[in-house]
Length: 417
Image (cartoon, rainbow, N blue to C red):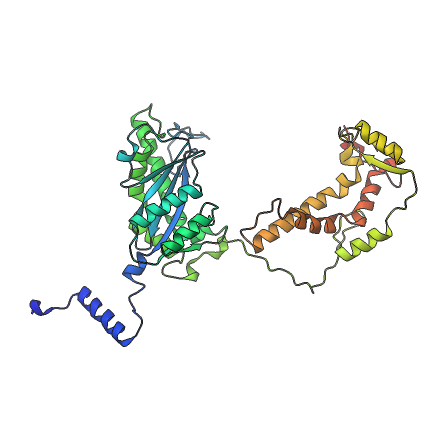
């Protein structure tokens, strides 16, 4: 019977079913099983070299508030880039040292087949990530395509990286910003145990040898032991399961740990100003700001009166000459009094910065990968100015500082030194 293929083993049955499905034109029901698991990967980097931390409890004298421990790790930053599949298989890590490689036989004592690199600060960049992708292709499964989950680090989305992935049939899925703590398997159930194991191993070695410090020279042997303890198939598979990446399960994600996005208000939605009092800052729509500003435009009669602080740029000789020629009477406010005497400081700049920060935060919630920089500063500033720099706030500022109407009693002299 054995010569005729009986009894039928699991592998033989699997081959028979696949052949039947192929002959009948049906999809392979086992496509997402064993081989599929081995073709789904997650990669990410984590840093070592800062102050070690441990959650273990220690014994001490009653009433002692602080327990000191010997620092056994240096502050030289080392980045470890790991990658694992949903089947629990691990790609040899990529270790990036700061400035230069150790002088010892680090590669012989470290994790087997590990890749090593150097950068100025010990962090990964696009060139190093491209070098790691070549390493990844060498040790990953040869079946294609491969699915690679990773975050949106700037080193991961370089054009060279994209071209390499396309050429090697690697389908990249960039996880949304600010979600990797719940969506990235390595972050969820691997890096925590890895750092804990590394710290415990370093502390134990420090107890055995009091003069031992874990630095570049002996980093890789300790990392090797910590990886064997933490980066195991059980933790990796549990990480993929807990993040809902495999098996695909949206309900597995704890959405309470995510910042809820905001919907953009429609252009037709009405906006109404709110006020808490006569002198309280309020928000106005752009149309009301422009209307009030047009009515409040000062005429061109001279002289003009200009209040300002005593900043060195304001009292230059050329400035003085220009003001005299244009009949601008300048009043420089006393030093250390602008927080109570300057209308813009008192009731404009505070609401302006608050409006700018709120707008930037709202845009960040709607588009998680958005950063407010030079390129998009002015549109946000425009909206913030329309909200905060309105006639009501400006007039209230002049009134509260006692500049107009002139009222010395309006100044809170307790705030003046």
